[in-house]
Image (cartoon, rainbow, N blue to C red; front, side, top):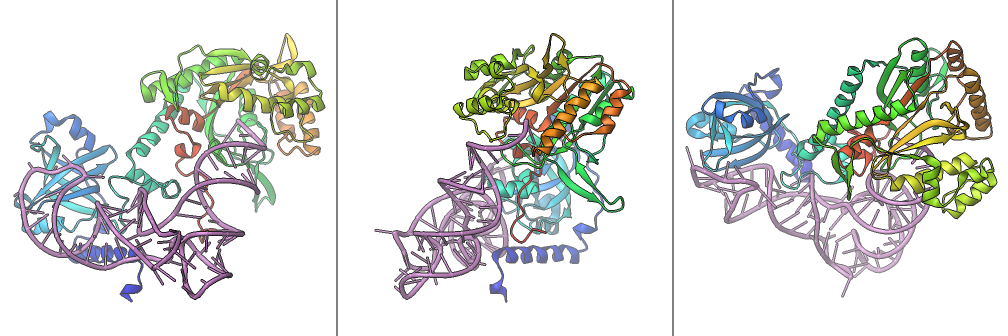
Length: 496
RNA sequence: GCGCCGGUAGCUCAGUCGGUAGAGCACCGGACUUUUAAUCCGGGGGUCGCAGGUUCGAUUCCUGCCCGGCGCACCA
């Protein structure tokens, strides 16, 4: 029987037996409900001069054990970092020291002791008492090499966080990036709101939705692809500055830059236009960068990116011409010619792609990858901007921009279209596209048009991809590195 | 969806031109009262991703499949 067990089971059984030992000594770790600690690891580090010789209580996970006969050193990992503790037989007594020897790497303990510096200069808590607070029944990843296998890191992110300090740091930075963005918007008087994720009609972006079903209402619902149309309803309602940070869902491919659920900031400001939105994007991104780097020059891949405003502003069509040598305006509306040009540029072109779609493709494949330093591409053709307002001097173009950093699109914004008649026509055109089989074209949201008919002030709106911004600010090559639980296929046997 | 690369002990990795596998850490036993990748001595631990095929014999060769990474396609 014993020999038929896998080694993993054997380790597990040994740990279970160890746990039983503690229980029989009346020290069941899982019976403990709290532990009063006085200091975090980094506080002891930072306030050593005041704390030296004083008694502190710390708690955390044992990340390493170094036993030397009658003295044992352990690294204790808590939310703030690592602190070394020292267990000595003459301080803990024979029985206490014996008990300490029963601890495993991975166990969570609380310990009380005196702060001192060892002769090698390490700040250490010389413990006089400890309590096992949780038993690790499984071994944690190896202390030196950590956990490397990407698949396990994503599937068992808790192990990744235990083993890799850089991962803990990265997700702390992500949180602070979002905090910085909230702080800026709140200071400017924006109201944070929440709008439906389950939507009867989806819109606000070009994307395929996830579909779900509400049993009681007996209807299909869509997971939102964007909050845009609801946020604009709020502007109609008089909430003049609103924003939402939340999850969007798009039923599309998964790769280094795309996860099916991702986090977007959308913000709308009444009586503002896209120029003000550009300033706001600069302000939000620089605030986030300063929050996590205290500077605006940051490393991304092989580059140093300088986020200092003002960022380069360049017309989209000019950028396209520079990157491809093609003047897209010269054959505007000629879908056939556009597809031909697209093929010549080496783009993947579908038989019914339109001029706008080829242009968009050229932008993504030929222009964006070159935009390493922060750049606003401005003024987009109306064909690919169904929710943006026309430029007064050139009604075939819209007041729209996208911001690129490190070759990634990080923001998309425009002066919002508030003319309900124009908006109805453009949504109707989208609807016709859908009927021709374009699954990503907008469906027709009647109530949104009705809302605009009550009058929306001139408004600027922006969207920032939080995951991508985090990629840039944490020098991460993949979006999965900045999402705690990225979408993966289920493991074999773990499916539904 | 297509192409390339990968999956060997709990973790990090070697390795087998086909003869059923090793190291370090972790774990178990022993020595050691200031270590920090502690050290030293001894020990246990593997359906070599899964399923077929070829073969006297497959972890190794072949085919299919699963999962992951990268690139392409789709998209933000």
